[in-house]
Image 1: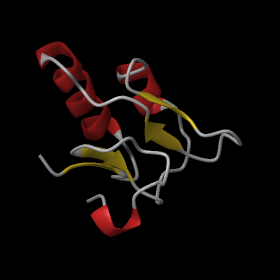
Image 2: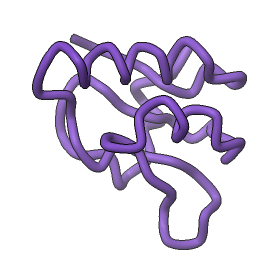
Image 3: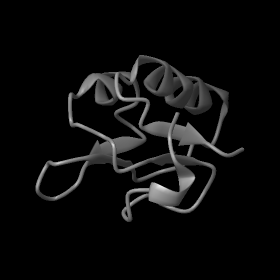
Image 4: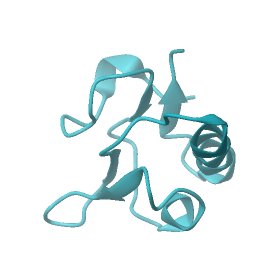
Length: 76
């Protein structure tokens, strides 16, 4: 389970986030490329955009579901 106390600093404000346990495996990027991207040195992924509709929320949920390190969280 993602730790809201250890959020990646690049996450935009909102309920969805990636924490510092992320190992950039790319799996989540395939599910939600319109919401997630690599940080500058490609050591982690973060939410650059919060979901704004049902389709984007479903993509964020799929990304969370496939994350092998459980680094994606939703406080919403």
